[in-house]
Image 1 (tube, rainbow, N blue to C red):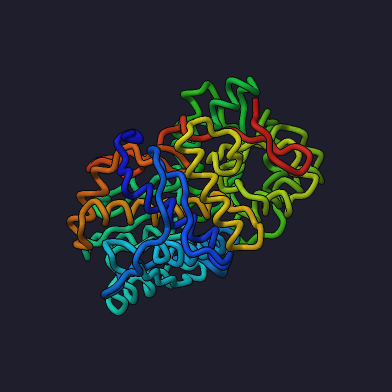
Image 2 (image 1 turned 60 degrees about the horizontal axis):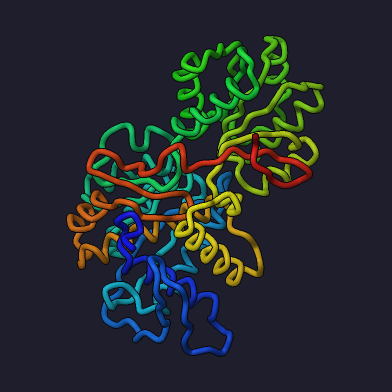
Length: 408
């Protein structure tokens, strides 16, 4: 009944909000839905009133990270609508103000100052990209304002200050362990090469691999990098091929990893390709085409919800997917959409537990969050751990026949 000590009240609210999204426009005034932790709840709640609770969000709707940010924007809009349909938070309406940082950290700084100073946001969800997230972290730390991050770079929570920042995405150092374990124990090879984006996410991933490889009995025989906007990686891959690695780990987000897969095929490089969770979306398969076949990568379970065995987690995930599909013409949410959903949910949970929008009260509630079940796993935060997830929450995925399967 305690749902691993999570707040049943907030889970009911979130499931009601999702149900509200599913029934919107269907002619029904109320809907009964099964609530997390058992029982039923009805969506005939009173309309929220009073001043809105403003949540600021900085995402990349345009620029190189748009493939990730577009679905995040969709989720933020959907959650505002559905939470308000379910009665708001603390009886007040929720307003999520979304700013596009255009995949540029400087734009993110401008957006953060605007959201805090002009829009009076009580917390920020920021950002899609690691560089933007780190830039905004300096501002929220100075202001003493909660920030939910949706990125993987380990430095986001490993390097101070972290008092005011929590993350929903799985961090690179955790994901790198899964990738290296697969290479060592399943592929049973010893020599690897690394190809990574030079941006904050890719560079951080390369650093994690370099620090951990020896623990798995692996030798890195070549490391090459590329700029995010490069359209051909044959030069880097030719150097890597010359080093005779037995497997290649590619760390980045689209389009770079897809270009790498296509260029590998052109160069007749038939060694295993292991990716990061930065390619955990259909866009990679679309861009890489046949070259995506056989690629293996760690991912959050939202990519393959059938892999979830925990009933409470499956319920939240299925309801989220159904709500998103209903709102966006049958499109399935990708893991980045999940990060945004979790960011809103965790903030709403904290505000509800605190009974206040005071920054300190939200901070205390976030640090006390335990067993909060979401699509990516059970979030457990503390004053010193602002990552919340464990490696066991992730899955290993293989691309086969233009879709995903669990890697053995």
